Amino acid sequence: MSTCLLCHNYFEEVDSWSTLFSLVEPDPLCSTCSEKFEKVDGELCEICGRSFSGLPDEYREGNLCYDCVRWENEPEWKGVLTKNRSLYLYNDFAKDVISLYKFRGDFAISSIFKTPLKKSFKTHFNSSYLVVSIPLSDERLYERGFNQAKAIAELLDVPIHEVLARTHLEKQSKKSRDERISGENVFRVVDIVQDKDILLVDDIYTTGSTLRHAGKVLIEAGAKSVSSLTLMRG
Image (cartoon, rainbow, N blue to C red; front, top):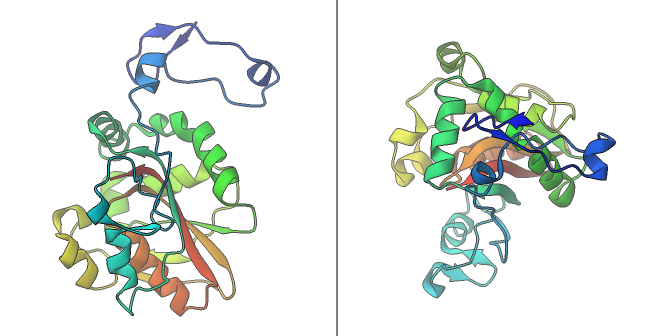
């Protein structure tokens, strides 16, 4: 008998050979909570990982969604982000979970993503990537108490490289898409990334602005490529 990390109800674990021999982590969620997460799957935009399911044709151009077409049509941003892959859609349930984790400091919640995150990493990326979590500014880190992106990256059980630093500015969530794109770049590179394939890790992909701004300074510093792995796709 286990206790669900989200609803705190008791549930019976389904045993398998993998869990019996500790090849995978036991499921920390009951089936009811687990099924509320909507997986990002099917045919995807080859850059941002957006699902084409239910997306009108006018928001798609070949293998890219319209958002990525717009990014790629800007010379400043073309090729900055090679690929993003996300685990789940940012639905209402996911928003509540991320709020508990990110803003209310329920750090233990991150463990519910460990098994699917490691699976996604092995499916879409590999150990040759330099894994870099999106940093918080010193002010935001003091306010929140922990860096949610770094905690997510640590679930991969691979070395995390702190090659980026961040300047404190207004929260991205308060800005429009155009303001995010045209605003000052808050990131700077603080270690060597020359000829490295970088994998950025963050909690949510919304407009892709944060990841591309981080990617831009990494590419300018000599990184070979920049991709990203995120929990949620907005």
